[in-house]
Length: 62
Image 1 (cartoon, rainbow, N blue to C red):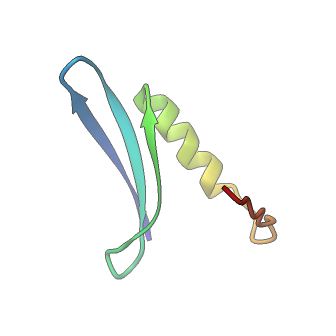
Image 2 (cartoon, rainbow, N blue to C red):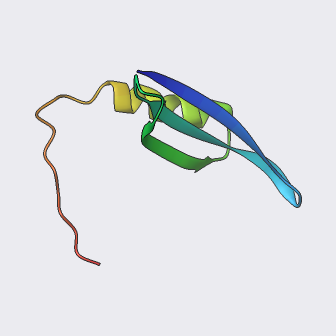
């Protein structure tokens, strides 16, 4: 698996930064979007990488 960082241009504003976690089959396993800076995007990736396997799942009804 690997992460991809994507710079997304926008016509009326500064670009935003997104990330994707790509599995070994090439499919997107997870993603985050809308970061204002590359550094913020990278910090989000570090946070995801630091997650423990026993991280709880919270179910939210919309």
